Image (cartoon, rainbow, N blue to C red; front, side):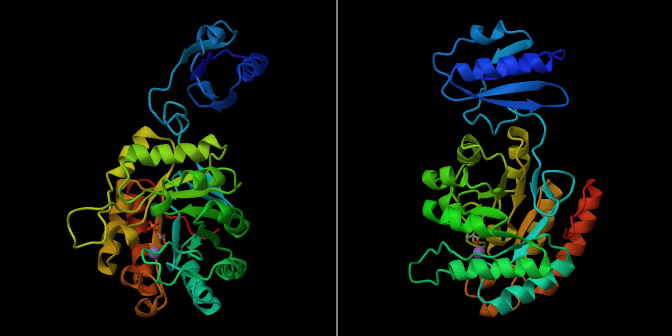
Length: 342
Ligand code: PEP
Ligand code: MN
């Protein structure tokens, strides 16, 4: 339920409305837009009569949010949400930050070397999995906490913010200790206990679309994070299953404008998992920026043939450098800019 306030509403009227909302058993979520100020009611609305709120001073109208997701919807919040990461990196504004790095952290040498290069080429955030969700239980599963420590050391050396994945609810707090952005992977998009825990972790969350998830399911998964009080959510289109096997997944770039119309949350694209094929990554990265993605996630490895995971889709550093030059031009053409390191 949304309580839309009158233009003339005073601060003391707002305080009073919030008190009433809380007395009715809801959390009051105030959002001040350029056009209107609204108070969203978080909680179970069954049995709530609009009249209880309509009669309060300063209230213009009260209406239900029509979408199944509530706080994630544009009805709830008109303005784009800007998710700010340490170091002044902002997702959802005119700048387009680039997250780059290997699929997995493999050693200090690997992650330091590549982080340094990526920073020089203009990436703003360093990615690398320490806990890897592998399709086969016999595949290498990542370095665990040792990998998180390597990422933290690479951040110290380069200043790049860290994006890394948590695989299960019990792992969230550990990953959040090290990460600037906690990633939830495609395979876990509907892991509700994990989402709830991530919603309380105190760090921005990058939520990847499940490989067979509809856009509504993605937005409802994001709703779990906001429902726990975490508004700093970045969505990520990373490709869905298709009937064609020329690529690993079908990067669904229509999700970018569709999500932007339905939600105020930023959405980035991952053309690496979205294609799974190195020479398809650059064209689809260009297309992602052109489609209006609020950032990119790109896998880059110092020596892809030796990568312990996802080597076939990892760019060589020189390719990443070329890509950065190209997307700077595309971003400029649509009134945006590729944000360099903080
Ligand atoms: C990843 O980013 O390393 C990853 C495993 O991605 P996804 O969850 O999209 O498969
Ligand atoms: Mn990967």
